[in-house]
Image (cartoon, helix red, strand yellow):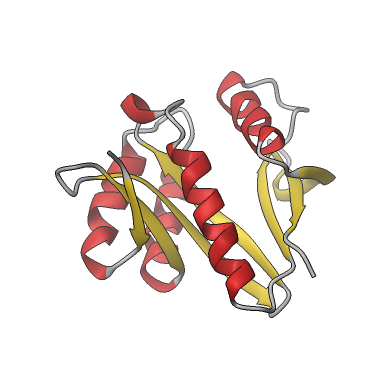
Length: 155
């Protein structure tokens, strides 16, 4: 059974190692940025019965009322088992409990680039209640247009 818990210092290496196995999602530049972010941002990890990291999510606040999912990854062998959904639902509950965060956003590759792994990612976000907000054609670079999704967490 998978458990969700806060991302701790001992989870940083296993989380980044997991991400390196997901070559269809993360390139070297992304992995380098992720390695920096995971060290300084808050997050959650999903661990299996052997306490092995099988997924993680990191986030940051831009303002007290808004947070952004910066990274999320689930081991390839564990995808489509509800782990990503559990990570995000747990994060949403945590953010609601802080009494301030009202909006959660996430950016992903826009559909103007035909790439099936990210088509699945967009379907995942939409399935769990995120709404498309806007596409920024050059936020990351012209080859990787960013699509922003948002979710209202409550009053």
